Length: 237
Length: 237
Image 1 (cartoon, each protein chain N blue to C red):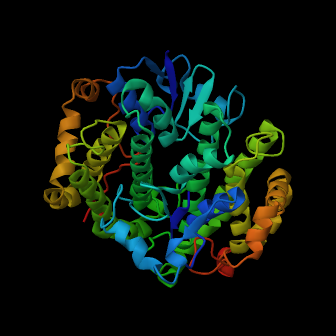
Image 2: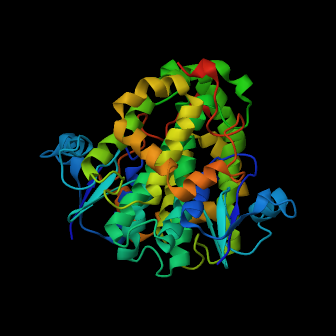
């Protein structure tokens, strides 16, 4: 089956967690809004209710035959077992999903560090608020989340979040660390030595052949200042 | 099986979505941190990694035999099909889960309306920021979310979010509307006429015998000013 991924064409954003899974799986997919023929209008049609299938609230969503699945973690819940990126047992799948949902919560906090008042305002219109929130984020929330995943890696053993079984949760933790290093290089350089298992996981994911090829390709959108992960030096303290 | 729910004992919070499902199911459960014998220490043991099972990042989590499941939507994903609160087909279950995840996103925005700088600061220490964020929330985000669920109810027909099949997603939408009416009575009174299907769903859920009995019981914690839904008149414009 050829999947259709619908996501904003110029950012990694939430769609990147799905792209990484599709790439690691070697799945056949088209990143619809990035194709010149179809572009963003093909995506907005769904949001406007002009398409078949269940109504998504927001991108990303994945079209797989007649199925239209939205919400990043929900897409991965469905997609990963079909491509060997999640174990077969129900407890292990729930666990992978639980980790993905925790990463989703973390990602909201990364976004809100530069947009505490809301996505409708420019960063420039919420700079003092961002400074306050980002200081709290780098001092407390970032170590809390990093510490949690480090503890999980220590408990589960085997080097991956599910122990010896590599899964999409590992791809997602890789993406968090890559993004945080872009957005908060100073904070991450200071914190990294405390989380050696997570840093090692990041390196091992980056070295996986399909992921390494993807990261080198044009399909990987560069981190940029319109994305969830943004680098504002004044917020990186 | 007797479930053990672990959540903070004095708020509805995220745990309430699980409580509603357990109550509607007539399931046997103990709300552990609310029992005098065990209390909050029984909960924090898990967060400190002193218990069996997978490590939760935060409450709520549900213990079902040896399984420890965290993340509200993940708990419901597992629990609901066991109690007739989710359909059997995989597409319908994904759809219910997708709606629950959208509600989870909405709930974060409700919380952040009074805590835009972060949960570690008192509301009193972020009042100007809250005013800005709450104005944006009531003017734009609240109608966007309400409008989405209203459109879903119109598309799916049958009166419930999954069409004719009642599910935990309906319980969760009930809880959102109940909470929003407490927190933003003026905004909700102004907006309600535009979302008649959602308002009707709220009334029908409230009238379900087990839910009605629960809402009258001492098990239902009252809305209060330490919870996610909070009523600050100055934020309700």
